[in-house]
Image (cartoon, rainbow, N blue to C red; front, side):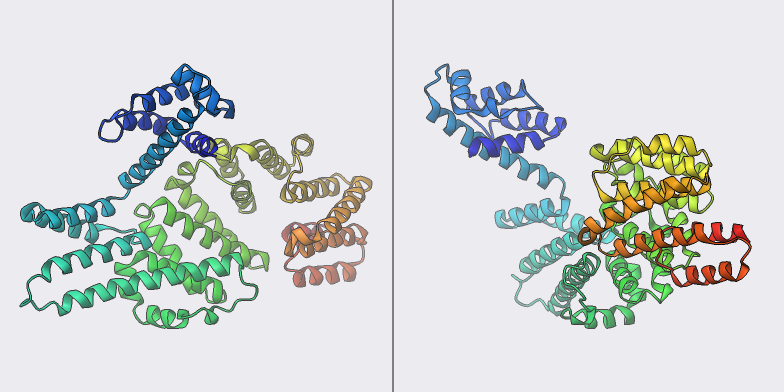
Length: 475
């Protein structure tokens, strides 16, 4: 089992981290065994593949101990190597967390009774805390640890009045609690982990909302992540109140270069999901809002920082540009960021994006050629492809092919009803509306008007704007 664990850890390391591991193992402070270094050099020959055969005890025994039978020695060596590799991972993580490093240093200096450097470090951490914008859960946790350490140090003077210090510590714990609860509530609601959960049922959330509403100006000035999470919660629980969306959008646009990538991702998906949900129920004014979010985040380097863009997110940006009549921007986005798509979905995503763009340009043969190169590993690729096929066949008056695609898609939907959830009804509605569209008599104005009223009611249907456009053309 040790060899499997070691193999998985080493295969997960980037080229840079694998090199750093070598430097770590060469340090006599961490490792005094020459055999460990020999094992590293042996495995380095096979990085990054590191096939399981290189980790077999008899193979290690032969290559490191020149004796195929010293398998127990090999297993002991691999066990020690694994422990050192795990230690390296800990050090690697520690390097990324400056506040944790500082807190550990302050505690060490305090225990060593080294006062001048101790005071310098306390002042340095106080400065770091004041200037930090991304006050996330990790921030409040380490701020709490820091203030608790400082209070312990100051508390050695029994004559010192420390009421304000402990009240401040209490306030920090409140912020940690508030942000943690908001994030948990938002995760539950966005993922629907608990079906039909009402946010009021989540313990303490109502009190947190009341507190946030009353102190929103101070929270916006001094606690950006709490401000963001509060607005995200309100956007999900009170979507009819646009002010929470506008407040978060404007705040993010103003401070976009100060957000960490992780926190920026959180607000990005919340803002775009809000717009998409509004658009899906026919509130088309949010098309422009969605496009402004995509373009603003693109200029800020958000997509460039993401080396693993998911296929749904990538295609959503392309489609948003087209829906806002910004075809050239969609083409630019495809060209600029196609290499950032998750590798296993890259070909299907690029071909589908090209098909969407070709259809918008009315280059139907090109669109069909691109669609023929899209595999149907996931329902998204299948249904989006069939939607475009249906539109192309309608535009080219190939109604035989169109009805054939509709029949095949209906069978697919029946077979995958449980997986598709709410998309099942939306897509079935689209198929029914397309069939109704091709049966319309362009001379019967009453029938056309009735169908338009039906589309006005069917706000959840896929491709509603296209259906309306095609119906209006009949008039």
